[in-house]
Structure formats: structure tokens, C-alpha cells
Image 1 (cartoon, one colour):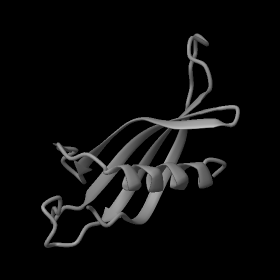
Image 2 (spheres, rainbow, N blue to C red):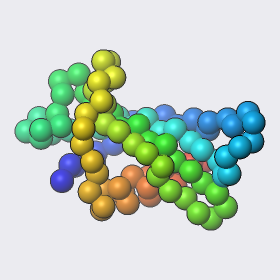
Image 3 (cartoon, helix red, strand yellow):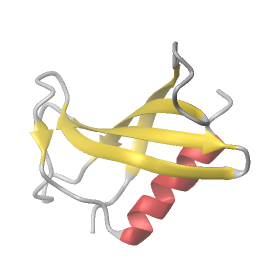
Image 4 (cartoon, rainbow, N blue to C red):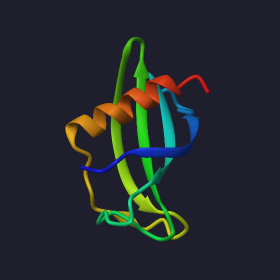
Length: 97
């Protein structure tokens, strides 16, 4: 299990110029503080990119990936169910910002 200590984030609403997709889509970039003993640790820093959809009262994470700060190298790690729920809640809470 990864300790998801979010140190900062950015969020941007993605535009659908053709109106093909239902709901509103957002892209979150979360900066994570990863313990140096964790296999996900990188000295350059680790981020999590999350694509999030809000449609009425329904919200969900469409996709996500961990990446190395600076190089944008993608790490092949998955969130556990409770971690994914934590990220979902974070995105819901910070949607309006």
C-alpha cells in the first residue's frame, strides 16, 4: 500500500469542443510525498495524473497513472481499492477549485 500524502495539486477542466462526451471531464495532477523506502520512490519526485468525470451526482475516475516528476516517465503501479477511493474523494472535494 502506498502512503498517498498529497503535497500539492492542479486541476483543469477539459473541454469537449464537439460535445461528444457526456459529463464534465477534469485532469488532476497530484504531487505525492513518497517514503524513500517505498519501491515507487524517485528522487525527482512522483506525481499522479488522474482523469476524472462528473456527470450530475455521478463521479468516477476514468484513468490514472503514476509518473516521475521532470522526466514524465510513467510507473507501472496500480492503486489499491481503498487508495483509489481516497483519490476519488480528493477529486470530488477539489473539483470546484
